[in-house]
Amino acid sequence: MDVQRGQWSSKLGFIFAAAGSAIGLGNIWRFPYVVGENGGAAFVLIYIVFVIIIGLPYMIAELALGRSTHKNPVGAISAIIPGSIWRWVGVLGVLTGVGILSFYGVIAGWTFGYIIKMAVGKIGAFSEFVSNPWIVLLLFAFFMLLTTLIVYGGVERGIERWSKILMPVLFVLLIGLIIYSNSLEGSGRGLTFYLQPDFSKITGKVMLAALGQAFFSMSLGMGLMITYGSYVSRKDNIVSSAFYIALFDTMIAIMAGLIIFPALFAMGESPSAGPSLVFVVFPKLFTQMPGGLAVGTFFFLLLSVAALTSTISLLEVPVAYLVDEKKVSRKKIVWVVAAFTFIVGIPSALSQGATEFFSNFALLPERLSPVDFLSHMSFIFGDFSLAFGALLLSLFVGWVWGGSKAANEIDTGSPFFSRTRSIWIFMIRYFVPLVVFLILLNLFGIFD
Ligand code: PHE
Image (cartoon, rainbow, N blue to C red):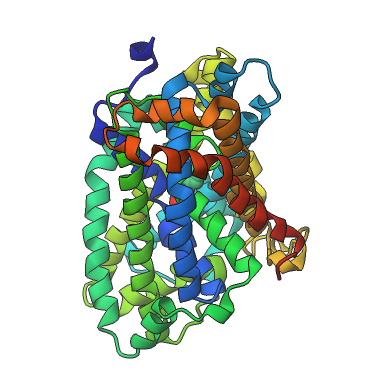
């Protein structure tokens, strides 16, 4: 059965695919602007703490559930306890995947647009670019098409191959850009903003943003790691895999900040520009750098590939669910899900100036600072749903499946796990759900 279902070709193949899902626009586009909006270094510090004490133990739980059941999120839950309402937690995850992909694909489309802009050397103003409805829709459609074609091919052929070569290249390019950006005059203040914490800036809202960003960036809370874990062999070490995925993911995000903030302060831009931040700062950096247009073309190309390995993973979750549970043909359903997601994404695509209605969209309370339709989607699916899903899934693994049964699964293939076993059980049963719950309470403005 396992063989038919498909498996990663090797342990490294899995780590690269999972890291490919984790590393994406979340690290390079979202992380810097969320840091900028939430006051800088103090946010970064809390973010790192959450990655270690919440993200890592929680990721291990999702992977264990996936590997043990060999199923998509809904199927995995039903395999542990058939016919219970818990399966709706899996359904929530599948819907969250569609919700995230619907706006993520839009940003990925912009990234692709910037490859062309850099290559032809006509950069222009970002605000003009995103307010052109046809261009953004076309780029969004193109990116969805690309994603669909790859997911169509199945996990091992489609996903693995792409991640392996290009992610290391991205890493090297980022190092080069860090050096360049920090050599600019006036960049020092950027480093201070980014690395010297001002603890008075920590509020309930900042904590919620840091937690949401940690889940978003590591692809947690919607069952992606359950789905990817379902293709992992029992010989593989779940604990060390999770460690490496979290490490690579966090490193790339931190590196993006090390480029953006020094550059931004050197250019006199504001750190709290929101979603446009990266698309304004990076092109400016490239226009003033010697040979910058070539570097910029290459940068946006790699960023598009990073985004692609994430959109693939986002599409894979609903597809795996429908193929497993509803017994539909993979080749057909991929198109249906992608088309549906595209339709859901149209308002997001038109929310950056193309239409007045979606650009000034205020449904959620102002305290949560959404300004347009896309930020609503990003908050609802990218922060709230993921944190809420993680809360429910950690309770599920810790109490319904049972901490020690889950720990037995993790044990298989992870020789050193036995020493930290009881700590992990404590984390997944009490610590993770409690912390996530307390932070979510702040949605109601309790700690501000
Ligand atoms: N982690 C991805 C990124 O940072 C986004 C993502 C979220 C992918 C959730 C899958 C699931 O770009």
